[in-house]
Length: 165
Image 1: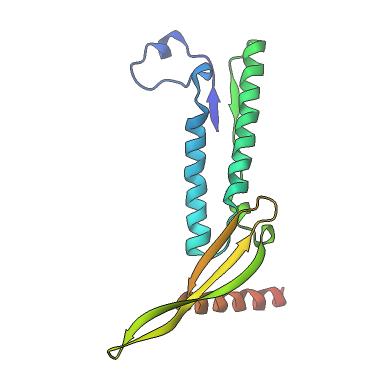
Image 2: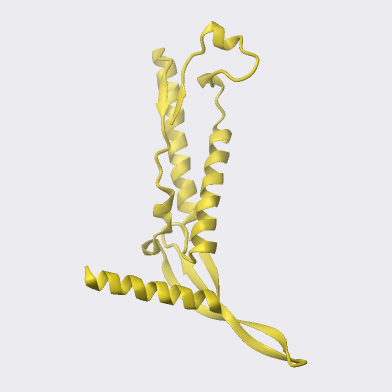
């Protein structure tokens, strides 16, 4: 949570540090920080967990929150209030829900490999294609064969646990 308020005279005299002045806040700083967070979650879900992530929806949500903050800053400035408390309060993991996407299809990854001195075409994995109907964002996730086996094993464990509950 960031707290923005008027600086005291002692704080204004600080050469470095101090508090962020509301009138000089830059939306781009918060936006850049939020994009970094979105990128970390995208990496976690798409590349590590092999699940689709609605990056555009996350960015739109951050944009709406920033617009709310801007309105609140202007409203408080016109009322003469100095303190502004604002938290983006966004659950970035919620954008990794497969319910946000439609499964389009699966395409095999075929690569040429050198086996016993002969070049042969080998299926090394699949591309799973998804589309988010609300944002129109398409995403293709590359899953290698050894990763597919692990995902299927984890999926089977989850189904067994769901049946027990």
